[in-house]
Image 1 (cartoon, one colour):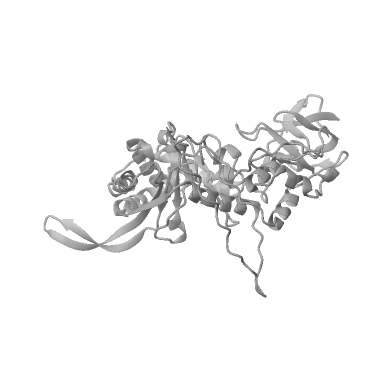
Image 2 (cartoon, rainbow, N blue to C red):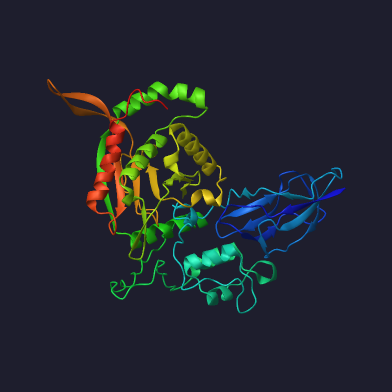
Length: 447
C-alpha cells in the first residue's frame, strides 16, 4: 500500500494559511475519492479538503487549531495504488455549502486589491490570548468585525478541544453582549490637523421586543456581515442617487434576433447583463473619476476596470463576484464570464479572490420585477448602478412629420455615488452616458 501526502491546497492569491478547525476522519477510517476529510478556515472562507484518492487515512500530520501554510502536508492516505503513485497530492478545496464566504470580502460587495473589512476593533486580535488560548483566523476575523476585545474573547467558554473558542461559540456570544459599544468604521488614513471634528457617537437603536407568536430568526454569518457592511457604507459615504429612463427598444429587438444563434455558436445564453457591463465600461473609460477609491483626503484613480455583479443566493443572501479587467473582454467574453460567475455563486463554489478587487458594481434589480432601486455603495468603491426591469410603455416619438405615440421598451437606471468625490454633474452625466450607449445600440451589432 502506497502513501499519499495531502497538502493544504491553494485557496486564492490572497490566502497564505488556514486553520485546521475539525477533522472529519480519524486515522484508520476509510475514505472515498473526493470525500471531505477535514474542515479548514481562513479569514475569508470556510472550506473542506477532500481526499484525492480512495484509501485509508493513515496519519494526521497537524492538529485541530493548528495554523498551516498553503502547500504544507496535513495528512497521509494509504492507497492500493502501485509504487508509481505520486508522493504528494494537493487537494482542491471544496467550499462548504453551509458556510458561504463572508461578504466583507465579497461585497463586496468587490473592492480594492484586498476586500474591505466591515468594522474593526481598536487593534488586531492576537492568535493567542493571555491565558494561552489559541484563536483561529475565522474567530479572530469575527471578533475584529464585531468589535470583540481580547478580554471578551478570553471570557467566552470555548466548546472546542482544550477549551478553544469555535465559530459557533463566538456567534452564540454576540447576541448576549450587553451594552457593547458599536465599533467605529475603519479610518483609512490618519486624520490631518485640519480634518473636521469627529462625528458624534452613534445613537443606540430603539429597543425591540418580541410578542407572543413572533418567530425569532437568528442571522447567519453572511447576513450579519452584509448588515454591518451596509451600515458601514452609509456611515462612510454621503449617498446621492441619480435616475434616468432609457429607451432600449433596439437592444431588446437585437437580442431577440441573435440570442438563439449566439447560444448555438457560443454555448452560452445571452442575457442583458453583459451588455449593461459593456456600456458601463465604455462610460468609465470616458469618465475615469467614477472608477476611484478614497484614502483619507487622497483620491486613488484605479487603473484596472473590475466590475462587480451583485448576485442573489438561494439562501436569500447576496454576494458580488468580480469580472476583472472587464474592459479587455468583448461581448462573448463578458457573457461567458457573467454566466460562469453567476452559476458558481449560486452553487457556493466561488474562490476568495473572485469576490475581491472590484472597482465598480452593477446590480440588476429588474430580475425581481423592480423598475428602479437606490443601491448602497459597495465600499471602498464610490459608485454603483442598478438596472431596472425592461417594460413596454407608450412613449412620444419625434419624427420629421411630427410627434407620434408608440410602444417602446423602457427601463430605469439608478446611479448611487459618493458625494465626497463624485458631484452631481459627474454622477448624472455618467448614468446619462450609459443610457445613451444602450439607446444607440446598433441593430446590426455583431458579437
